[in-house]
Length: 124
Image 1 (cartoon, rainbow, N blue to C red):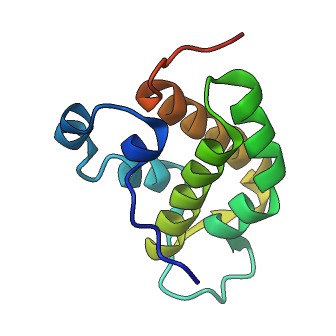
Image 2: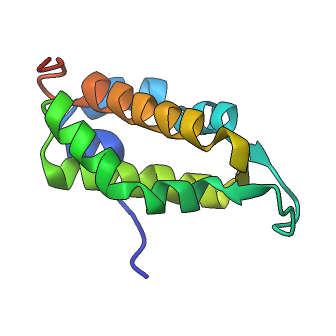
């Protein structure tokens, strides 16, 4: 598996100095609001947040490309970053909250894409 070495700002073409001032731990607190930390993965009533992102990747990607001024490659990188951080943070979501979780993921990804993209505005 290849490691992600670039920042969201680099991939989206945003100025790095501005991004670095705001980026320290920027995505983690938002992901922690969507998922909750679990020490063990044996909880049958929940699923890893990273697996939710993986399962709905195509939907999230299409929503980002359709609603923001990012390319499919930029959107894919952002989704990979969210997935990696969710897995690293060991975040889980209850199965009963799957729909709300997906809405939150798409909202967070859209916010990140529009905030750090070089043009940074919604097409809608």
